Length: 410
Image (cartoon, rainbow, N blue to C red; front, top):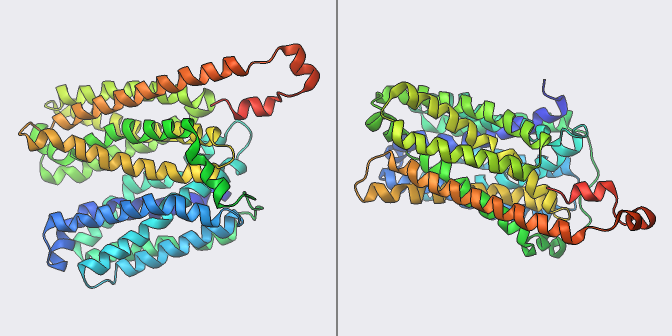
């Protein structure tokens, strides 16, 4: 059962997940309403992603000294305001800027929320607490996005953003009522916060996320034509298939949190990337079989969320003086993965290959992410070997406390 204190974080994740993905299903409606072509309307997706990438480090750096409850409420106020404005904007350019500003709080909310969730959790269950926060994101893909897309398509696409704004308002209310007051998580300024970008370990984790996780986006970005033109499902079945993928994400989110608590996060990530490579290769070879195709949709959906918690925990443990910045920048990295996966997955399509080929590209990207995991493990083990101190000296001088060893041991 979810901790009551974590519910506002999950509810915020529900709203963020809904606004990020609902636009994809409503592009034809938005394009027709605004008098633009569908590819032009697609820039609205890019506007939101750009907001995430810019807003994640910027808002965290500017708000790090404030109490987390105050930061989260402020971020949700921005989220609610600009999603409400998205429902009212009369033209394409005004909507473009509204979507950009809607994306600004995305990464910062999850960044601050991840720290808050880990602090509220019992010892040894921090990863599962973070996974609970991301439950809202998985539920959004499972139920909320299909529901809001249906309402927006049947009535008016503007209602979709109005509903997202309402979820934001509810999140503000429950943050105020249920999230306990906590002291400021940072006493450092902007310069200290940006030290995060100077560590090779952090950039390696960003690479693992942006490249490896991009493998699943190469598959997911083209799942609709894959299922209709290769697997042979009707277009009316796509919404149900998306619900199946969302169900996999819910299961995978919980599994990833459990794995990250039971073993080193980098080991969990390596295992999941290995499974990801195998699953995406299976998609390439077996998508012509409908039952197998459905099973693989569930499995790939599960893996897409399972790997998220281990890499987030890995980043938090590797950036101990910049936890909020690290957690926020991970959301930017996931959006980079989204863009890279869609771009590289579309290359074989431009050259006339079938819709199963993006999954093969995705397998290559996931394999690259796995390789970066092994590089991380090798470098970490070398650091550990160099930093070892004789037990007698450690016992005498107490220069290696158990807490510090665990904190630097992803």
